[in-house]
Length: 170
Image (tube, rainbow, N blue to C red; front, side, top):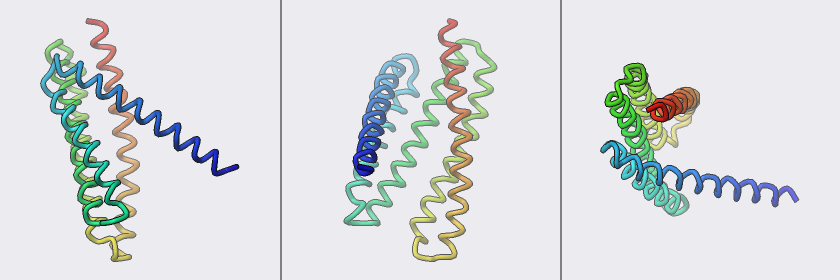
């Protein structure tokens, strides 16, 4: 009985993830007509999806390939988010919204630092995964990074909401 509930939840999460990816894809395609940064974000999104797929494929057969593809997908995601925010900052600048430009520039710096720390931590965990002391230290770093990522993601969503409101006013 409990197994079915887990399968239903996993299936529902998969469907919602697919739906969210489709909405992202459509959004990037439409936004790329207005700002070139969104085309770069679209390319990074597609690249991230492909690299994540390869990382999952090699998960059982080769830890090295799985790690390389997973880390590469994280780097593609970093560039996707940075290009998205950069595109929104450019749109805000074109619409003379100084407040949203300032918020976007702060968010860009925050995202760059947190995502870079995340990628470095992933690389270090991958390289030193067999050393117990280093792994426990890196686990602490990863937990801290997870909390910081949650904070930046909330700020990112608030910024997206602000940009949506700014664009709807014009």
